[in-house]
Image (cartoon, rainbow, N blue to C red; front, side, top):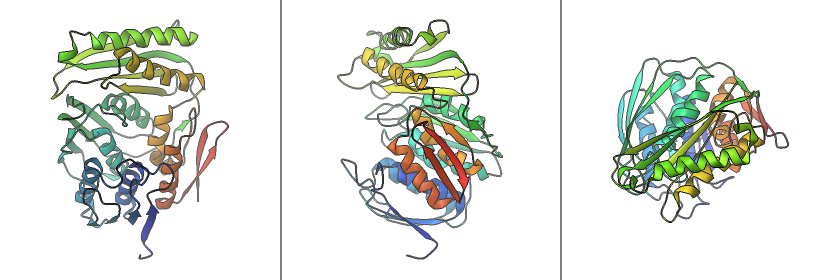
Length: 347
């Protein structure tokens, strides 16, 4: 390989799709090419799945990249960006592949746009093993706004597994990132949420049951919630197949802590709700400033601003993401496992 091509072993760390998504985003951002082998080596079905292939091909369009290995099931990928051209795009994942994960592969590169851009994306809005689209909208984008990231998201239609068909409109405008240290949480001021279910589940009151269980679990498990408002919006939506999700976020003085859970076959509404509630409680109980999932997703942005964050636990996903970012940017992540604090310094 040429010296200007970054070589990455896709089996490193968590060994999943995050390696590809982060590499694509930072390749567009820096203009550096990369070669990945052993793609998704630690997954049940290794290699590029439809969702990852859409990420690759969309990123390639943005930067007119030279690409080899962009085939379903491919375990190797060569990606060399050329002329970067941000433009409005229509993107169809073609399956219930996560729209949220596709955005992860694109959003960091938008910090350099010179004009407003708009993406119309079709795929899964609420699917397993990915943040819900409500999490992106109400947690990640709000956290990023503290760094000066300027974007908005409109949910046009919901898409659940297996048919997908969800649609969103993502808009970004020229921005200039600033340093923000996610190290102070302050008091929890309120908990908000969205309990979503497809219309055919209305008779079973899925949305109501999810919301009711969340409130009961929060009040029972953490006294901090006894006096603060908990407001869960209920919604039944049109979709190609049945499904549900619940997304929660706790507004604090200086940050936002989120959690979500996706409904699935043989999983009761109450189990879905309790999963989200306990996840939120865990992060709050451990004095996190940002939740464990946000800590992973925020890394490229705090790397660009030499920031820092405090979470509840340093996940394998976060370590893997830090490793990939260090390959592209002149930064070093200093990770304090005991305090669950990540600081970024110049390399």
